[in-house]
Length: 254
Image (cartoon, rainbow, N blue to C red):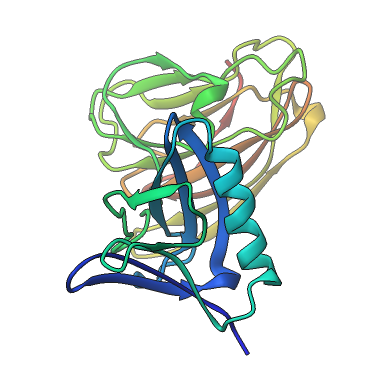
């Protein structure tokens, strides 16, 4: 049978959760111990509730030991009253009251970082996972972080063409175009009446160091690609490129 935790802060205000949902406690300040539980009400995985206990000064450790003992099973009842401000009943005598509860209603929404691209820029390893959206017909050049030291292996960047380049090109470029290379496969689809699909493969020995989407033979609106650093000086490309007219590979030298 599950054990339940009960905390009451005022008339018509109480909290109950299972002891199994207890995540831990933090001594967050003098006279303050915060209890954390998996959320009782949000239904979102990873969301939590914070229950702050007000304690006697310098008695925070005693309170934490008492709470831990009660939740671990040394408390015999199925309902563990941690704190009841109305009945003045506490699991340990050094608890004086309950602070304002912080309850998760929807949990934390995880979002991708999206960056609109209208000018040239140099990316950093800290921006790994960002989706860059080319958003200007004048084109832009994005330079990847230098992978020569090998300390950014595993970083990756996503790119999407939202506005077709009509002058210059949307380009992603290696920082060291002499030593760094791009390889992998581009799936290129012609959106004209022929709807031809062509796969362009590239290996390390080909020496490509850029992806070039000029908007005429490659890389119109709707094209997308991911570039991942898998080793020193090596970037793997996975791409779905849309084109019109005479289709050409987007792999390019600098």
